[in-house]
Image 1: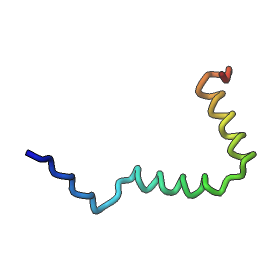
Image 2: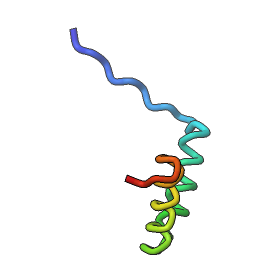
Image 3: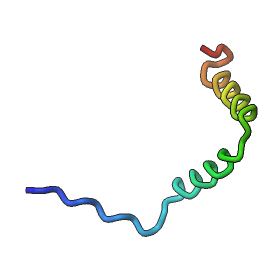
Length: 51
């Protein structure tokens, strides 16, 4: 017996909408802005000691 594919959801979820907005904003960042945000993330994630 073959499995059927799930039907596509007609209405996007809140997470999908928010994700699309953030991707659009982040795509406009320069390399230096991306690096700055990456370093900030590492500081937060590793509680002050990146890598």
